[in-house]
Image 1 (tube, rainbow, N blue to C red):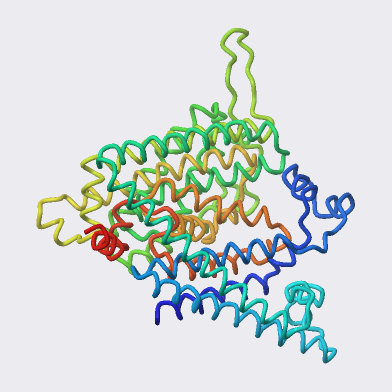
Image 2 (image 1 turned 45 degrees about the horizontal axis):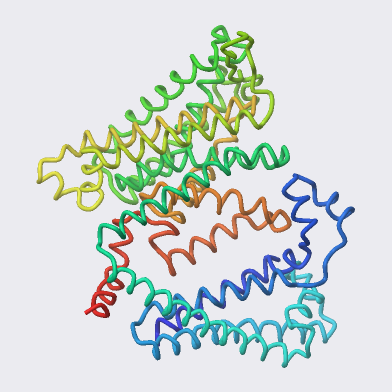
Amino acid sequence: MQPAIRTGLITGLVLLFFILIGVYSTFEALTVSGIWLTIQGATASEIAAQVPTSTNPQFSRILTALTALLVGALAARQTTSIGKGLASAALANAIAGAMCGVFLLLANALYGANFNLAFVFEKIKEPTVKALLFGQPALVGAAIWLGLMTVLGLVGALLWFGWRALNLRQRMARPSGSVSTRSNQLQLAILIAAGLFLFLAPLFIGVYWNQVLGSIGLYVLLGLGLNIVVGFAGLLDLGYVGFFAIGAYTIAVFTAPGYPFQWNFWIALPVAMIAAAIAGALLGIPVLRLRGDYLAIVTLGFGEIIRIILKFNPLTGGPQGVLNVGAPTFMIPLIKVPVGFGSSTPFWYLIFFACIIVAFIAIRLNDSRTGRAWTAMREDEDASEAMGIDTTRAKLLAFGAGAFFAGLGGAIYASRQQHIFPDDFTLLVSINALALIIIGGLGSIPGVIIGSVVLIGLPEVLRPIADYRLLAYSALLVVMMLVRPEGLIPSARRQREFHERDQELEAIEST
C-alpha cells in the first residue's frame, strides 16, 4: 500500500497547489462566451465588460473529477489484482480528498473567525471556499470531498482494468504485424489532423493567439535542438540560450539598416545558422571530457558569457540592442511582386514549416548511425568508447546540430520581434527549453511539441494565474519526476526502461 499512499499524498499536494494559485477560482469565472473571447485575444477587462461572471463552479468540479479518475487509474496500474487495484485507488483518492477537505475546513474556520485568509493567499477568497465546499456546511462539504474522490478513484480503477483487458484481448486476437500496422495508421491520422488544424487555426483566431502560437513554435524549435544534445546524446546543456542569441544577433547585424551589410533575410539566415553551429562545435571542444553536473555548470557559464558580451559590445548595440531587424520577403511567381511578413500570421507559417523540417531532420538523425552512437554514448560513454565509437566526433556533432537549430530559432525570433536586446536571452530561456523536453519526454519528438504546448501555451490560456508561471513550472516538474519520470510522451526506448515491470505483469496475465 506504500505506492498508493505516496500517490495519494502527491495528488493531495497537487490539488492544494491548484487551490492556492487560483486555478479553481479561475475556472469558476469561465463561461462559453468568455472562452471564445479569450481565444479571439480579448483582454481581461474586455471579457469582464462583455461577459457576466459565472458563480457556477462546474469547470473546477470537472477538473477535480478528471484528476480523481486519472489518479485512480494510475494507482490501479501498479498491480495486477483487481481487488488490490481497487483498494489502492480508493486509498490514494481518499488521502487526497481528506487533505483537501481538511484544508477547506481550516480555511472556512478562519473566515468564520473574521480572519481574511486572502491577505496570505490572495486567491483563497471566502466565496471560493464556499463554492469548493459545494455550498454545504463545512463538515458536510469536507465529507463530500472524501466520498466523491474515493468513488471516482474506484471508477478510474475500473476503467483502467476494463481498458487493459480489452487491449489484451485485441492483442491476442490479432497477429502482431496487424496490431503495429493499425497503430502506425492511427498515429499517422492523428499527425495529419493535428497538422491541418495548426495550418488552418491562424485564419480563425485573433492576433494575440497567433502570437502565442508563434511563441510555442519557437520553443518547439529550441526544444528540438536541445533534445538532440540532452535527449539523444545525454549532454546536459544549460547554456543553450547562447546559440539562440548568436543566431538572433547574426541575422540582426546582417539585415538591420544601421549596419553596412543590409542583406536579404534569406541570404543572412544560413549565415546565422552556421555561426551558431560553429559556436556549438567550439563550445564542445573544451568540454569533451566533462560529464553531468560539471558539463552543466560550464555550459551555463557559456550562456552568461554570450549575454554579457552582447550587452557591452558596441557592434551589437550594447544594452540598446539592435532595432529594425530585417523581415523575410518572398516573390509571388506569376506577378513578380515582393510580399513581406507584416503580421504574425505569415511568421506562424514560417515557424510551422521550420518545425516540420527540423523535426524530420531530427528523426532521421536519431535513426542514423550517428543517432545510434549518441544513444550508446548516453547510456555508457566508457563502454561506447571501448566498442570503437568516436565519442569526440559524436559530441561535437551533437553540440553543432543542436546549436544549428537554435540559430534558426533565434533568427526567426529576431525577425519577428524586429528588435532584440541582450536581456531577451537570459538563463530562463534555457531552463524553459530544458523543462519542456523533460515534461514532454527526453528523446521524443512529439514530447517536445506537447511540452511546448503545456509550458508555453497553457499559461496563456489561464492568463489570470500567469503570475504563478514559474511556480507552476516548478510544481509540474516535481510532479512529473515523481509520477511519470519518463515524460508525457516518452520515446519508445525510455518507456521500455521505465515500465519493464508493467510489461512483465502483462506477460504474466497473458499466459
